[in-house]
Length: 305
Image 1 (cartoon, one colour):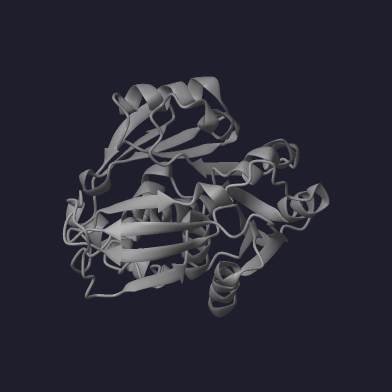
Image 2: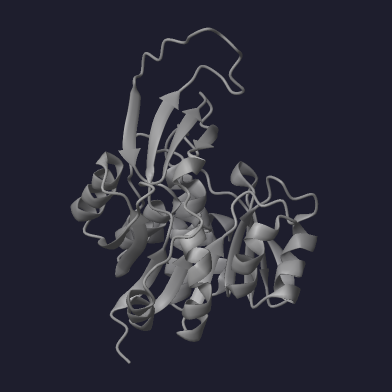
């Protein structure tokens, strides 16, 4: 079987409106003057992963549901401009959107428009199966249409990854994704005991690798029944925004995985890509390139020797 796509990204397309605020949490006031402006741009988790993978030279295809609305046009234009293949299934509820409040230290608070999260949305099975059959790997966003797609993706015999984001380790919505994926990414933000949660993910599902990211504190990698600490990588420029850092980490990790690298080196690639993402303003979408990532990873390894 010919697999002409390296990574199929399923779900996670949408639009964010970026608002830079003076501090987070934002104290109540009748109004605020946002002198840096308020900007709407395409790019949510699936978009960021797809763009990150493509920037690293991987043949990437993105599948999601989009509305016939201005937000959907922004997403389509982003993929056209970056040369990332996109299959857009019509979504009557409209394209997913959110408002991101970004503080001076780069932290963010995301407000998601749940009215556009259509629980009954489905990807046409022939389209999904054909794309999966032509892919080496599939990365699945934790959206309703992607949840319905999991059985077909597993039947296709392709390896899967997913990002559970700020899961608390208990919310049942995340369980199907966690159980179906071979590689699981999760944030430590709401985990009382990250190692315990990581080991439960392996015990209860198919995961052979689990990565728990901790932002500027680094990450934890579970592979071959061993948990190791992955130090954070110093950003190459001042930190302006953490939005998309986790998606960049996932893209860097998958880049290494598809090159046949060890999990530890994959995590280094992820840390380098994530650090780069923190230097990019939320109003832009600019991922680390292949040469930049490899050179920076080599520098980090050399410094650790």
